[in-house]
Image (cartoon, rainbow, N blue to C red; front, side, top):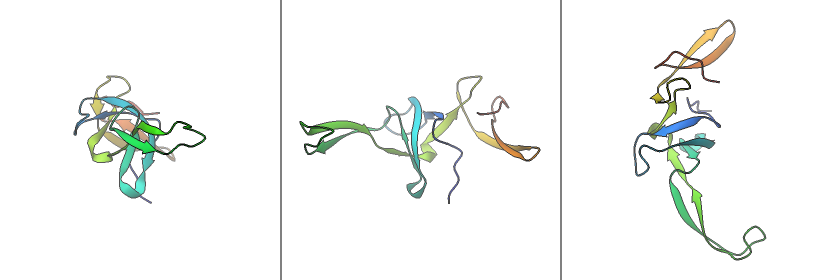
Length: 105
């Protein structure tokens, strides 16, 4: 299984592509495709048939995956994009922001 520095629930910054400069919360990480689905980023139009969820059918806007190399974690204290590092405290492996050195929850 692949390991990423970005996890579900993180707030990320998009640093490349059509949505460059936007931020959003990670809804899902797709490890098999090296992609993440970010709230409000990379919106696509999907044509749907009528179903119990969408009785009218039609065109639905939804988020599509974006490659994890185009995402950076937002620093919890400074607010800007930062790289992620790992360190061990006792027997725990924790993520920390390289810009501020603060632990990422």
